[in-house]
Image (tube, rainbow over all chains, first blue to last red; front, side, top):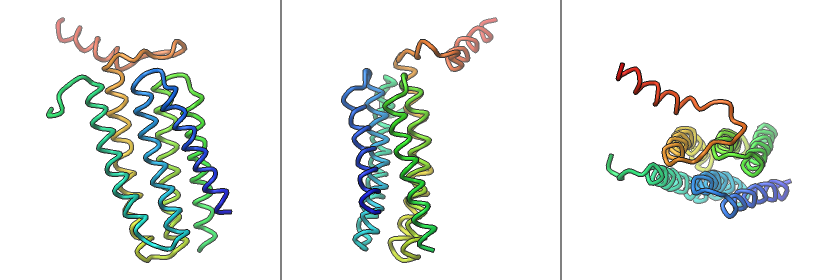
Length: 85
Length: 115
């Protein structure tokens, strides 16, 4: 059963990576990278259950924080303004 | 309790998969953002809420609850910033779209201020 979970999540990640490669504009790629970061958080939670250790959840919290910062920075860059407004 | 956890994790992974299918299949950056952000936020939060039902309230469960609250706060914020940024950078809508309320709001607001 856990193998099915991991395979389905990895297939979802592959769909996101397809959109990163084939997206016609830059915001498509940014959206796909944001969604991929959220998927990795769920993957880390499943790994934490499987291994029974808690540092995978530390990785998940740090990854969600960095994904949010990257998304907001790329959105401000797409908007065409400086970063300090 | 572990059956509740496994049910929550299964439904969350199904929502993740459907959101990523929407990310590939939909025609426009705004449609993709709408489908993928809502589905994947709900799916990952259901996985993270299912973790403490499965393992109990130890270090893994409490960190999973904290991570779920954090994602529930930050993911809609990032999606809103992305939609605003992509609209302002001039990404065109899909040709089948029926309205652009943000553009109408900006243009209409300027006209009303001038009149």
